[in-house]
Length: 425
Ligand SMILES: *[C@@H]1O[C@H](CO)[C@@H](O)[C@H](O)[C@H]1NC(C)=O
Ligand SMILES: *[C@@H]1O[C@H](CO)[C@@H](O)[C@H](O)[C@H]1NC(C)=O
Ligand SMILES: *[C@@H]1O[C@H](CO)[C@@H](O)[C@H](O)[C@H]1NC(C)=O
Ligand SMILES: [Cu+2]
Image (cartoon, rainbow, N blue to C red; front, side, top):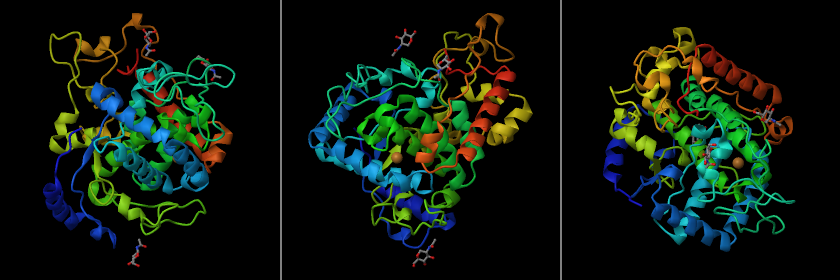
């Protein structure tokens, strides 16, 4: 794993940004990191990097750290979900886990699982295969018997890791890159962004896998950290779109409905919230491959994807969505409606489409799906969260249903416009 020393760069950037960034009192004393690690997508790790991560996790497991993270999370669960603490608490929590792993191997960074790309048929993802995190539970106790945790015995009560996919051997559809792109562009306050992400992308993965992931000791499932690192990546990207105002933006209420401030402590610690908000400072010595690319060169993030048809360069995925009717674009993609948009507000550009689309591979003028494509292009509705889970998270069922309704409306509008998702097979 490569580290690069960008202390000087960050210092200069810090000086520059400080002019326009509202830095809360105290935060100016949080030191810049000496070295910064890069968190990457699990499927983009080299075999050596994945092995190093697996070895560090196995060592942490042997020393009972996995049990500890599961236990600790279950103790604070009711105050770190369904409130503004959600994103900042989990950022700090993941960082503690990464610190533990780095005690075994200082070069290890926790990867993320960009599960949005697998939204159509999550159970089919290679991430849930034996090479990575293992699949569905089997037998009377729904034991996961392959992948990283295939032989584990866990808190509480020394039992196997369990998963119970929410549709038998399948997992109901999750939220698409298109949906997350829309949320990135429509969420203008911290509280909105937190609510929209926690109750869509975040919850759907917990409930789709179920078993341990459906409980409050969910960190016992190795999926937990890769999933939450992805959520943290989305948060970091959302911040990086408007660093001056969003880096330290913190609004909404805590679990007792008291308005929050950046002086609050991360639950269960004496760390102030402001100390975890800015990546590259304090203990947050990491960044993401997607953000690094965007910093160096905004266009690097919008890679041209390989296509079977190479007669002429195909439009980037962003351009496919740009062809939506202006009204639909304005409603769900306000940034795109004004122009190409910020690359970090485009979750459709950072991942490889499953296969070239008949409509976009050879023709620049995208119109409608060819008649023989059956329903391939119809995006499925994401599966909603059960009432008891929403209540366990401390959220309002009515508000979550309204959020889901808006997500269904988006999918319906895209389907009605004959939009073809490049992330579907
Ligand atoms: C996903 O589904 C395809 C087609 O059914 C199959 O060929 C492939 O092996 C599956 N991949 C995984 C990881 O299950
Ligand atoms: C399982 O998937 C099928 C096919 O997509 C769907 O019709 C059904 O409602 C799902 N079942 C549950 C329990 O969600
Ligand atoms: C945080 O505390 C400092 C020092 O007591 C105070 O000056 C500042 O106004 C507080 N900030 C917020 C956002 O409450
Ligand atoms: Cu949590």
